[in-house]
Length: 180
Image 1: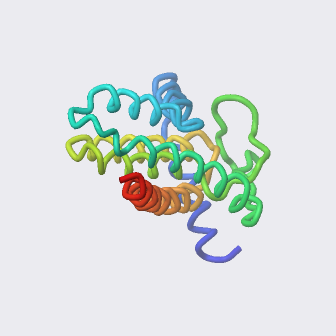
Image 2: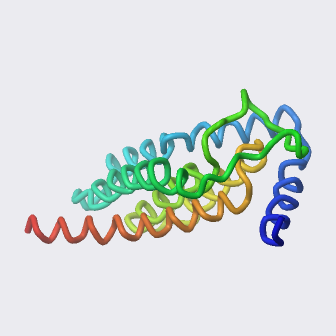
């Protein structure tokens, strides 16, 4: 095993073996579940949509675009190309919350969607930016704690999501300009 993957595995075991109590497991499961398919991010986008004072809803197209791009890029292209397996209980992983996931692990779709959404919504609502990035980090860390992803999966997903978020903003801006 090369050095980066060995470090990744050791960091995984450190985070994954933090104390597991009903409260910490429940909180991690709640965060992870909220991040599934971007559910929490679309709820936040909807709330911001209703609260937005400008009424132009500029973030709405980019958040939908970001969600679609994350789904396509992560699940249909990058994960099959990377072909990295998920953490294995045989190596000492504690897996919380159901059965083992059998699809590929890299990059984390939860992290990608969370960071894409934090970029898009944070641009629209700067006063929420810190909260949005904190939520993205917590959702991402929950995936390691629950035994679903390695740290490099989460880091890769976060970087991919950050790029998709910025790309979605640029595409949204271009489309808005074309509309007049």
